[in-house]
Image (cartoon, rainbow, N blue to C red; front, top):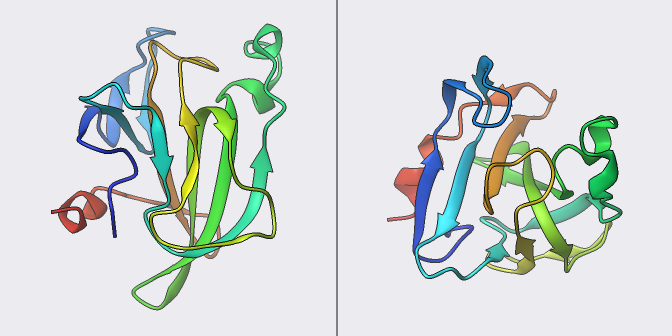
Length: 145
């Protein structure tokens, strides 16, 4: 696996937290990344197939339409330890891939920003198993080193 953001730092880990915008305690099902270099490119952590790309984000709908609450989004189907998983990349301002595209590990898939319900520019990455059950993504951090 490779880093989704170059020279990253984690701004919000997986787990229960106080949401920085709503102030409500809730589960954070992913990891939020930013680049220490202010370089907002997002890369695929694994090879796979893009199964969904939403690039119709409308800021005026972020509080009223759940589809717009995370900015633009890309979902990649990939194999982790031989099993199908889905990796979601959220809070994108630009998508550089389209549904049905095969992509390589390290492919440039988009650019993150301060879009959706957000408290600053970042990439939110989460992982689901084949049954769309959330997977604690913390294990991927060890893979980046």
